[in-house]
Image 1: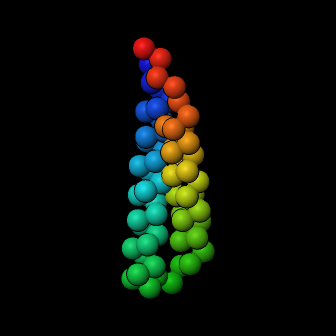
Image 2: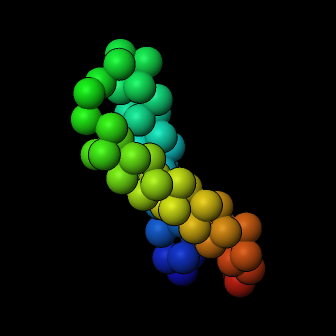
Length: 61
């Protein structure tokens, strides 16, 4: 089973959603910068850890 690969894909998608949300709120000049920083950092962590999982998982057939 490719549980690691599926989990990596889910993490990557969640990271992309978090980064898009952060960018959207920054463009709309949101006043809650602290929560945007938290969402942006978590999005970056999810994105890079998901990419790392997908890239480093070997295919075992």
